[in-house]
Image (cartoon, rainbow, N blue to C red; front, side):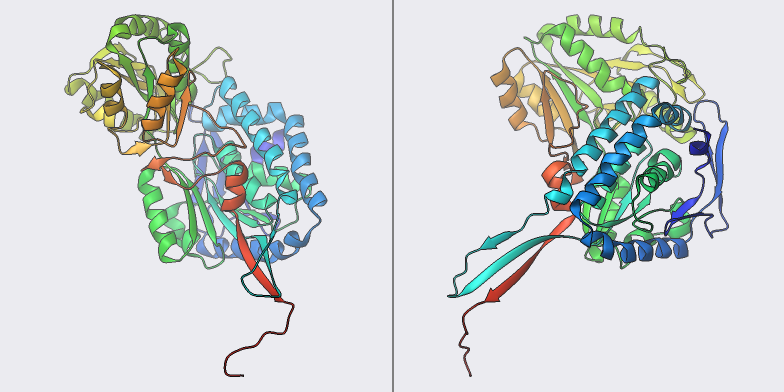
Length: 486
């Protein structure tokens, strides 16, 4: 649908309008530079209007019949299915995602909406006993009120919806700020879908702007009681600090440096396939991507041979071509950062088993062998199709290497001995580990989140319900109570 490409406005109080900032922003195709949209950025005043609209609309939404609330999310799924091809087209053009990536992301969004649709009927309370005679304790689960959501550029449709849908379904109002490079997929498209599904006006608001225009206003604003951020650890640390000063709950999904472990008894074909998928899906621009593959020395040469053969078959270029596996990075800044890390890897002595070219924003695969845990490329998160292969002598050394990082988001272990793999997984300092699978996993009903510098809190399923609600204690004294000093 052509109108989906024209979503270059702010969505505030149920109305599509220009931002009031003097800054004009552009949204361009990361592969060929074509202009997708041009729009006026939101100002601090627009942010305030969005939060006030969400606060006002939330009061009625909280009281809405749960069956009516559920219907909005079910209808949103149907609308996505009807507009499937148009959405795929925007993912390709705005994000540089391949068709495979687009299909994957849309599936995740639909699953998240279906999970969120259950929330209105899961706002359960409790009646608890009391130590006081004749007293009844009622504990209610209630919405926090208004949630501020800040989403990234890599999986913007899903990573926005991951917080937006559960927060709305739990009875909250939401203000969403998508990344400036993905304002449609991460923001205005979501507003359009919910608008068509019948979500009350003002309940969901989208402000598209640069941080230079609003500074910390999005987080500091007095209306939102909870801030959900997905992005870099550096920015997440700042948001957490600002939120803490303002006594707001914060949920942070941050960077990763995931390790995929290949033990000496691994199914080699499976391990290679999982490792290729875990690194090169969406050009490696996924927080869960495997940055390091740690391989038992007894199977190192065998794994490397098969891995190189598989990676060499990956097609790079135009994401609009259905044969393309690796499309462009999101912008020139990411390309320059990647160049510096590749140069650092070469300088520090890593062996370039595959050293792909850089053509515009398309970075062809780079595979470094004989990497050590001290090298920069083994320590830094690389948001690109660049991978480090590390050899280890035994399980103890593997564990030492995989935990030698500031991050702890995802990981994987490949072994035909499930209990051996499980014991290793228990000792890995990371929030999510997948045995005989890839590092990229997300299910709508299972706790998602990291340890160390990879984030704070958990989302999905009951964890999202906890994140976007609070509890209220109401006690009833049925018997006349005697007080001191009476």
